[in-house]
Amino acid sequence: MHAKTSTTACFIFLLLMIPAWGQDPRKEEREADKYYQKWMDQDVLYIITDEEREIFQELSTADEKDQFIEQFWQRRDTDLTTAINEYKEEHYRRLAFVNQKYGSGIPGWKTDRGRTYIMYGPADEIEYYAGGSYLRKPWEGGGRTATYPFEIWYYNYLPGVGGDIELEFVDRSFSGEFKLAMYPWEKDMLLHVDGLGETNAERFGLANRAQRPGLHPGNLNNLSFMKKYMGARNKDLPFERQLQYFRLQKPPQIKQKELQKIVDTRVTYDVLPLSVYVHHVWVGDHNALVPITLEICNSELTYVSRGDIFKARVGIYGRITSMRGKLITEFEETLASEYKARYIEAGRTQKSVFQKIAPLQPGRYKIELVVKDLSSSNVGTFYQGIHIPALKTDSLTTSPLVLADRLQPLDDFPDTPTSFVLGAVRVVPNVSGRFKPDDELGVYLQVHNAGIDSSTSLPEVDIEYAIRRGNEVISRVTDTSGSSIEYVSDERLVLVRKMKIESLKAGRYQVVVTVSDSLTGQKTQNKASFEIVG
Image (tube, rainbow, N blue to C red; front, top):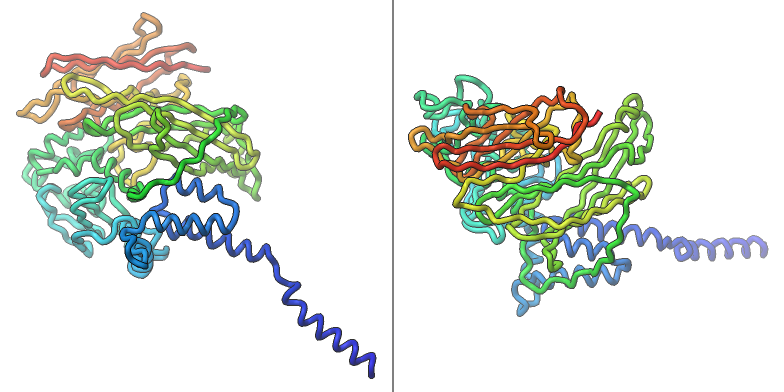
């Protein structure tokens, strides 16, 4: 009896002790990690700056992270004389509102409308359209068509973006998820239906659908004509819409003193070889879009087998700074490449290409890239200074000549802008400058300050495409009809040309493009080198 009582007492004692012994500090750490990750990837995803994100990721203790979060909100407090933080209260109100209002199979904060509302607050005015029959506004060309459901949000002014902002969100899937539209015709359900949904100019024979900007590959896209006969506005032009889109992605400006930047130690790695190509196109006198294209040979990557799929993943970090070291922009992406087992050997002979387009003003900058194979931990780096000159406004001039692997005028516009898109053309640069004889050599060039005939709203230019080897001209084609002009506006001509090179022997060559303007009497020339390999 006594022995039984003693055993019971010991058992009870052990039960009482189990909760204390069973505390798992790792579980608490995992819960804390989830909280901090959610705070960064959801709560403040759209308002945290790249610099703040980098610093937060470097913090190791909960106390440091809690202090950072407290200071994060303090820097944004709009009224330090009150007990509450009005900015923080308003931010979480917006989060709750968009999750309730804009959820559509995905949380509201992940949608384009949710993101816009979180970053910029309620629009000054919103127009709602349920879809169906729609009478276009004068600057859309007039005429009746049928549309997907869409909304137009008007903002009088947004800091860092500009004034007179007009954003269209279109529900092309009828799912309730309205996506930010790059182009005003994305809402048109009859866009590719001949004879229906005509604009006024098309209906009266003053224009045809092929003259709408970018709708059909190979056709002349004359925005001067559209302004004259359709009333199109400058802010509707593809490059203006694209520039606005990139500005909208930036976190709102912080008016308080920024965090002190971390001083980086530059270490150069070449274990993971990579090639990078940087060029620019001007968007007005004071802005440019700078595509940064990175290429990695798949043979350098580590593919991991997951059943019947072989997959490689590469982490990419990049930043652009001024020559004095001021951070202009930074980005972080993951590039994935995967093949089924039966295609993996062929896949290893291919290349993976990534592009980031950064809006910059004319000036001198430094680009720094770090690329890491997430399976092997091999690292490659790239550092380069770039100079974006100011656009000359008093003479015929061109942007850099881009030699491309693929050129595709967009005849079916995406819901949101993607990489490799410049205006209304998808341009995938050939990063290495090496082509095979059976490749098509794509040429992309923008021409500025060309004369426009007031009677036709068209330019009068002759365009010569020549391939040279040394001083010898191997081939020459002259375009006098404008067939290679993909886009026309008062600001620019966009030239798109695909050239056959099957007759070229191995060696180095140059493409030389000469543009002669008969209206202004001016001529300009640009060139780029390439190599033919076996």
